[in-house]
Length: 333
Image 1: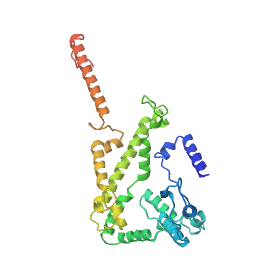
Image 2: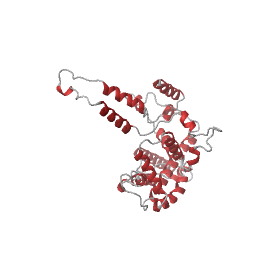
Image 3: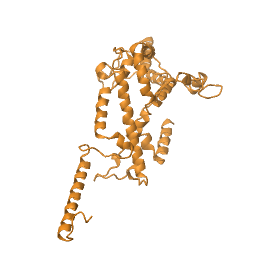
Image 4: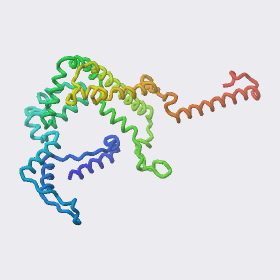
C-alpha cells in the first residue's frame, strides 16, 4: 500500500511536469518503526539455521539463554532507535502543533517556543517536536548546548549572530531550486550525444525568456548572499569560548573542522570568493550578466570569433570606401 501511494504521488508529479523540481535528487529512505524492528529481530533469532553442504563454518553457535537473548535484542533496538514515534492523536492531545480549543497554532507548544529567525529553522524545530529524541544522552547534549548559549562569550556571539540570521532567506528551498535548474536527463541520451527525450524545461520556448532568466539569476544571487551571511555568522563565533570536546554539540555546529566542529566555513569562504571574483552580483540583479574571461572556455572562443568577424567587416568597409566608393570611412556607415 505504501509503495502504491508513492507511485501514485510520483505519477501525479510527472503528469504535472514538476517531478524534477520536487524530486531533483531522487533519494528515498524507508522508514521502519521501532516495533517492526523488534518483531523482525525476534523472528530472525527464534529459528535455528543449520549449515548447508556439511560446511563447518555454517553451523550456528550454541543457543543462548532466553533472558540473554531478550536483553541483547532490547539493546539492539534501543541503539537503532533515535526518536520517538507520535501519532496524530497524541500530537492533538498534547497540543504540540495546535490547541484543542480553537484548533489553531496559537498557545500550542510550537507557537510558544518558536522564536526562530529563519524559515528553515522553523521547519527544523517543527520536525524536532514531531520526532522527539529517545536517548537520554542526546537530550542532555542538547540541553547543555542551550545552557552554554545563555552565558559567557557564547551569549555575546549569539547576540551578534541574531541580526545576521534574521536577514537570511529560505536557504534550503533556494538550494533545491538552484539544484533543479542544473538538471540534465543523461539517461535518455542517444548514441550521438543528443538528448532524445529531454525534460520540458530544456526544450520549452518561453516568450518571456528574459524575465525567467533574470529570475533564475536573482535566485542564484540571493543564495550567494545568504551563504556569505552564513560565513559572517561563523566569523562571529571564532572568538567564542565553547566546549571543544567531542560531546560539545555547540562546538560541532558553530566551529570549523580545524577547531573540532562540522561547519565548513573556510571551504565555503573559498568557494564564495571564486564566485564573487568571476560573477558580478550587482550587475546580475539588473539583468546584465556575463562570465568573466577565463571562466567559460566556450564563451571565450565565441567572443574571439565575434571579434574576428567584426575586425574583418571593419577592414572590408575601409577597403570599399577607399577603392570603390572613393569616400572617407567615416562618411559610410
